[in-house]
Image 1 (cartoon, helix red, strand yellow):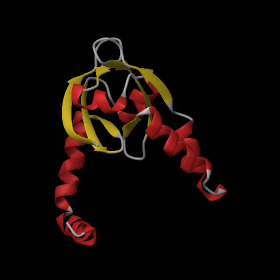
Image 2 (cartoon, one colour):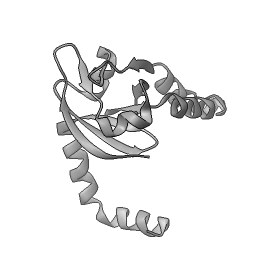
Image 3 (cartoon, one colour):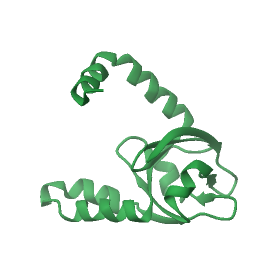
Length: 140
């Protein structure tokens, strides 16, 4: 289970550290792709395989979403320091230029431009009533 949050900085070569607490579950290679929000999603190989199987089984009505996710997916190997290189097209999608917040959301990581992540949290806090309904529906 991927959970928690960490902040890192992108280096001059476009690399970012994957936090040690996430590396054990993800392994030495992760699949990174664009996501619906202005962020990136990162999956372990087995997690990505499950996503791929679900996406391939979707009816044609979902082709835009499938195209969005598959067309940007990149295999990223972790180096000895636990870093991955984020390709320019992925950094551009997420607006990542320097500060990166990495968020564990269960089966995947999300990589955010830190300023975008802070704005996202502010928006979530503004919608407390909607969140309360969702929590109640989940029976937490």
